[in-house]
Amino acid sequence: MSMTSTPSGREADHAAIERLSRAFGRVLIRYFEKRGVRKMDLEDAVQEVFTRLSRREGFSELGGLQEYLFETASSVAVDYHRHRAAQRRSGEHDPYDDDLHAIADVSPEEILAGKQDLQALHRALLELPERNRNIFVLYRLEKMTKPEIARRLGLSLSAVEKNLVRARDHLCTRLGRPA
Image (tube, rainbow, N blue to C red; front, top):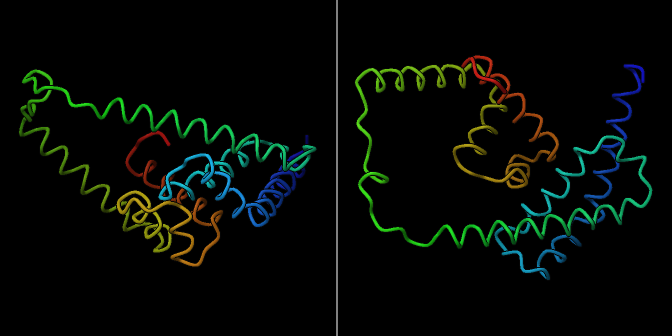
């Protein structure tokens, strides 16, 4: 495959996913409602479907895109319920055990290193373009979903995702951590 065919293939995949998103976004909301996904998690479940589809190279060349879409949605619904069941199980209360739950002693060196890391993160955040920084803060610190950020800022979901990747890559580079 030549270097010039790869971008056009990804562009075709992206366009196919955008078309499916516009055509089936509301349908998927109802699909997940009928399968017991909590109202507060509906849009995240729909987003997860399109995120999974976007990872599939050559997606636009597949036959039966609608069938593939709903197979993926079914998989997301199953994963959602598994995750919820695990959360319920882990939500059971454990009795307090000093060895497990006590706050660890932190040395002055560790406190200083933590403060320095926080200052480095702050500087790296300020280096980001305003849009990248705002999207990163909304997603990571305000815990907004990507679709919520897109609606709030009037951007496409793809633009939000690209800005998050740019912000993450910049921060990882500046802090000397793998992306």
